[in-house]
Image (cartoon, rainbow, N blue to C red; front, side):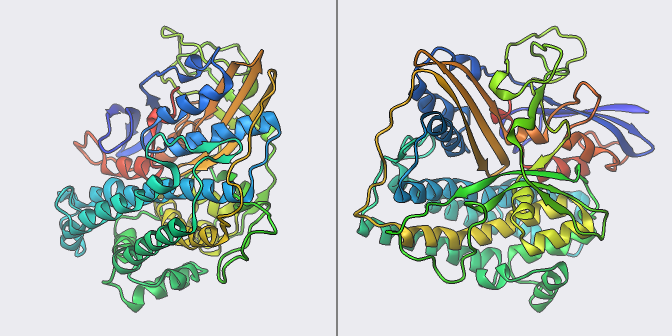
Length: 504
């Protein structure tokens, strides 16, 4: 048996190391190390409550809106504040803009360029993949970066700027949208739709969204196999064995994405847009896989059953896992048995996976449920779920813009109590994000954040149970002489890590 230390990884937000035990060309055990400590949860202690809205977006430069949304929901929960319908629509638009930009970036800049490596040169799809996805020079990459730049211009109108947008408040959005701006925003969303339909899917999004099984997916592929970058991804799935690579824990968590307003003044929903489920476009809950080839099942989420275990983190450990409302984040660098700055979040003492795959499973998306029933949570199904979400949410954004009534309020005044506690749950591109806040005398006494990569890249807990990525890496192939195994990189990237959000 040999030990292999992989990292730092390129094209990853933040620093990451993975220690692998390898035997007979296969990974037998993995330990995932989030190598930074940043201290945001300590910085917030003693600050006035609204200061959180300035500090937490700066946790990350690529998913700052997600942090803002979770913080505003925590303060709104603490104060019993309800956004007006326009404020909810605007907040959803701001969050969806960032999330879809992340999905686009993951596909074109983070994931697909790994298949341009010389190790894949013998495959028939390799020359076309290099032409489309080679870093800096790929035609598809260049077009996607340009489309992303124009897409993020939405946030100039919706939120004033990006990143670290400050328009989102517990009472709604402080940036009202007038009728002329709504028309311009719709034009920008339709421009993005046109890019997706022309370059990425090479198909109307409505046609792709209607695919309800893996068999129908491959029929869609066969209809025009050399058109579009999504079909190019599908071409390499079987050659690279992505459907078998990186199986996760089989349990998936979604806090529910894009809370929906119910306001009689709002315009009716647009035809062809999925109805909300439990107050969200993408439902809240837990999904548990069945046996391969058998359906899984959805379960209700009990947020009180979330805990964080610091046994193997360089943090003070009280000996028992703590709910985030009572959590402690205090460094202890020389702690025996620790190997990461990341705590180990658990739900009902179990490991869960979070992300687009979880959102689509819990919300009943037929194609994702079918591919996961056949293959489980793997590199293939995680990436496919992001593509499904990218295609699906463009129509929802058009719907929210149609529902905005410019004459109605976007934000209501907020008055927070001096003492109390609140929880803000949201869905970032990478998965479930939770903020827990406790106020005493009008100032923050405790603030704890559990980020998506915290769930997916968690270390072992006190029982020795590995985190989701640590489980997914077991049995990954390692070729002789590989110092950075390509299969390991595919698995890591399939979770789309954001390490700076993980370690506060």
